[in-house]
Image (cartoon, rainbow over the protein chains, first blue to last red):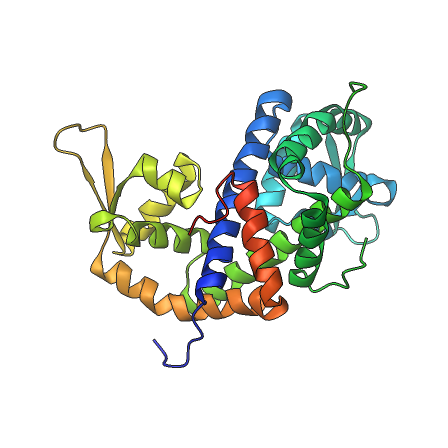
Length: 154
Length: 154
């Protein structure tokens, strides 16, 4: 251990621990709701959302990994499952066969639209029903700062 | 889709999107730092931390899954790896053979102590260097509310 470690202060430790607990509870609740009501894990839902927001609902697999926040290997596994379900299709770029494109199918879009209300309800129940309007604005600013963005970012 | 869905307001949408982005960037940074400097994924680090805080540095596997925020199957895989590395040991409860106990070894504790300064430095760089003291307090309150706790919780 080096001598010059700047350990967290009590206030920082409190915030960090609370963040870890909130994150754990939130992820677990979102996952359970989506699994129960729509039969898909939260990580898969995020992949469908990311694709739905791409031009032509299509993305390269490497870009999609960044957008959905998963590792390439986890994404590849998930997209394989989503493809088997008919919600995503994959094809090789005609110009560069190393590039694989993933597309959200109409069926996948319908599945996403069907899952969205329940998911949004759970996000609201776990977060926004528990915060005042000022805290919602504070949360946006804090998270924008952590993400290294201008707070006015949409 | 039901008619009475309470979709997120613009302010809520902004906060939720920022949260997702911050979370993604934070997890990726913490994972990269730990992998690079200590050769272990963040999820494994959280398991070692959870065990280090249990009485006798020992926990049942089911309790440990809750503490470390992982699924039982992911935990079982991770603890298998940590056991192979000599950082965790497992044994069956003498009274109830169905209960498996995991213990952090001295070597595991030393590994955790070695990894902690770099990890704390990354937590500081990604979060606390980017927030003012008021925001640190706001983050603790917001996260305590999401976790359903009294804000005075340590």
